[in-house]
Image (cartoon, rainbow, N blue to C red; front, side, top):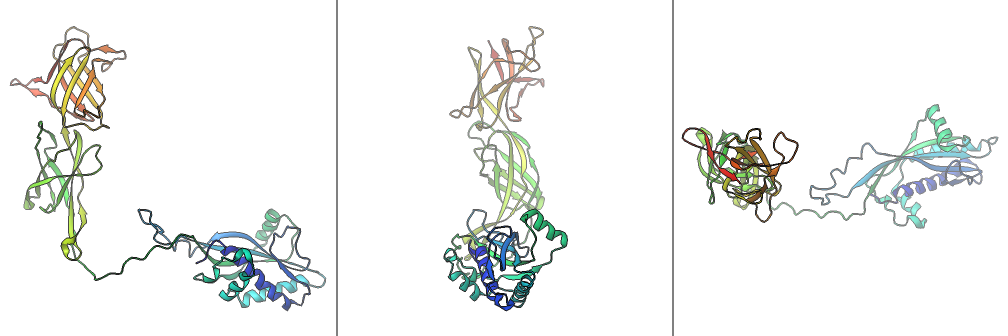
Length: 421
């Protein structure tokens, strides 16, 4: 491949190649210049080389993809593949047909030798100081020239819109391909394979259809609870993991028993789950490498099924002025929303709302204890109102999960109760 001097090296090599072909035209004093066709320093007799367009090469543009791995490390040196379009203009005495004679010499040269040889590139850049570091001659493919067939409309646009000068006899050529690489150090090669180690693993994706129970409350520490997973292709070797709000890494679980014939696994919930919507998933590993137990690879992963962990109220106290303190289990994450829902047991005095929802903010130092101010805007109201004295049923809501209410023998709700004074 070649570096950033490749484009200029093509132009210089083309100019010297045409310069060597001009004596065959029989035009005395002809020279080659490399400037714009509307410049003032054009030759009176000779050929001007002008690079007027550059475009990506369709065949090579994606040959280096991808260039980097997912962690950003270099896989191969990035390269740009370009086609260069040159406009060759001819100057001389029209009465002596000098322009046409120069055109004949140039066309003959590029048709007979359409590729820039590596020797020609090396010789051309050796005498140009600004191109001393060019490595175009080492490019994997040589640069080839093909004539561009301009329609009369395209030719008129080129001269009238871009060049804004009087037309002179001209011809266009495309140079392809120029491969430009970055200066990044090439990536080190991987170690060769010492010996192949192949293992055929049958593909059977584990699918969890349901969990029981779907909603459960954890008792005060130490909390132990079980889930029964039901699905297809469940195996005792599957690794159980739990996903909980606010924790990015899965929490491993413990498999208690398995019944593959009935498609069931019984797992124990781990410590560290938070109240709210949680998830459970299964991962299947295979032992690869040599010896086989030296490396574990994930070969299949089940879907994630949701279940709800209810927050449990451990203690509930009212303290003046206007503060209800609630201790909950399990601990709440810092990004979770916590609120306290109060329902009056006694509807007196008449006309006051029966339900209140108090918002609380988690304390990073006490993720299981929250204070709620009883001066709030009640549900359905627009003005702040202090919760009136009385007895209230209390429920803690964490995100969308609520703590359960206690029921009595008659079937009504009996607690937890907080008394506001």
